[in-house]
Length: 114
Image (tube, rainbow, N blue to C red; front, side, top):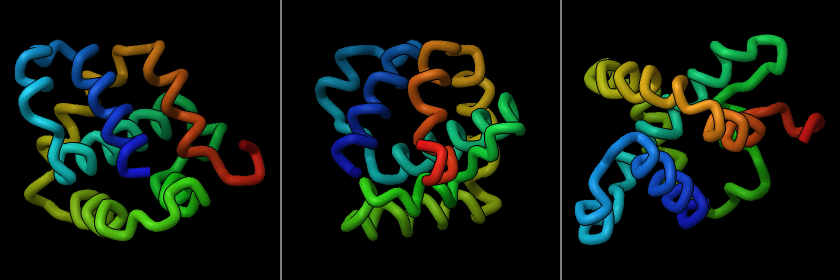
């Protein structure tokens, strides 16, 4: 999942206006991937409450097996008050990217509906 999450993170960061040069030289950190994961999960839940999207669903997905370091960072970021501004800012940006929301939100769906 870490490589998948980082690839999704790269695509999303590019779409949100980050410079290609910066991304080519600096792979996103685990913390950046965690902030983006939480922000996308919250945006999906807010945009489509009827679909029961949650961060926990994404973490329990079998595709995320073996990614304990990233999962721990996602949980830390989700609960940490010091990360809430970064999450909120990122959430606002990703909510405006309909194509990415359509692609990413199913990762946060309950397992039975995937």
